[in-house]
Image (cartoon, rainbow, N blue to C red; front, side, top):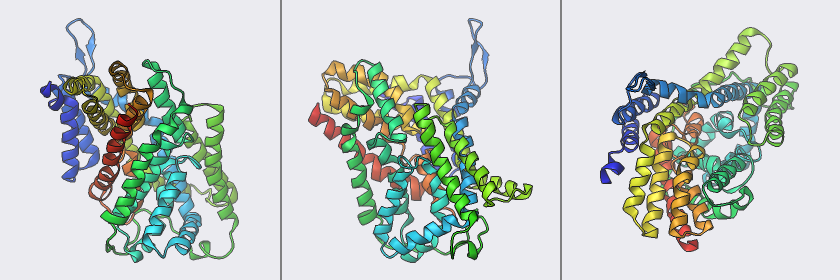
Length: 463
């Protein structure tokens, strides 16, 4: 059983991916190598070959490419939202907003970081555009952050908190999707629960993230850190007259475009339950059309091409990483190692409730680290955890906390996760923020460990 746990293709491939990333190897190639390694460890062929019974045996690369297809909508949405971010930069509206934040909260570093976490939280619920706000808002704030000598690792934790804590706790926007996934998969596996009943049990998990954020801001990264004032790597040209004085039609067009993106998602959420992903792409396209109408964007072909290229520069890398991460998840599922990993860990835990809870939290972490999304982890673990916990006599409250907690960890801090890629997209706009050491490791340590501890304690209390 120890061999099934530690020499499992899923476990080993995750270690390979993490090790390569820690050595600052390219993230995209690290995920691809880890995918091939997982497939080979499980006995999968590289290419699809005829099987002994005459049927084809799907190869690693075919499984990988097929898995990538599941993220096509997200990849397209991120590139279009990147184009919207570039257009908002060019209009001067983003700089105006950044300067307003600087005037109001730019005197005290810790206050700014808390406000940044609150603004990030709006991207999950109030204005559900997820990480698209980061390249819009954060780059214009970097000069102010440099003056205050704010450690960008603390800023990464603030943004990651806002991207994660709201969907864990609040049943709105992306949180509604998460709560529905938790409720549906628990119900499908033997315990009837509703999405509306989930949120009270999420309070310990959200509380753990608050504790992690406060530790990051006031303890881990409270000391000043020096940065140089460098030009942005990808930035639209902004005229000073566009960032001062009264608002112009181009600014109103940018503002209406941003509102249209939000409005499209609200409409889609109410009309098509489940928050369809195409609403992000369609909303961003509608926003760009509105900007054309108001003169925010020039209709000239070269200006439009510049906008799209700028969008690819801001968000294209994230889009490709998400595609590759989806392919990796497909390979991990195909290896059959996930089920073996779960069975081995639960067998070793035996009938001990505490050890079982610890084992389930570790399993959830490993699976989410592999597939890169909490939302995709829940169905995998619920199918095994719910019957197991019911058999051991755990209460419904303990089951909900355990499933949600096991699924929620691993999202923050993993190189291929948008919760880590998002902060880096803004904080590394001038090339002074390392994705692994300045985003992944700080957010992993400050959020995953507290969530695990709080989830185990809370589940034992209500067991």
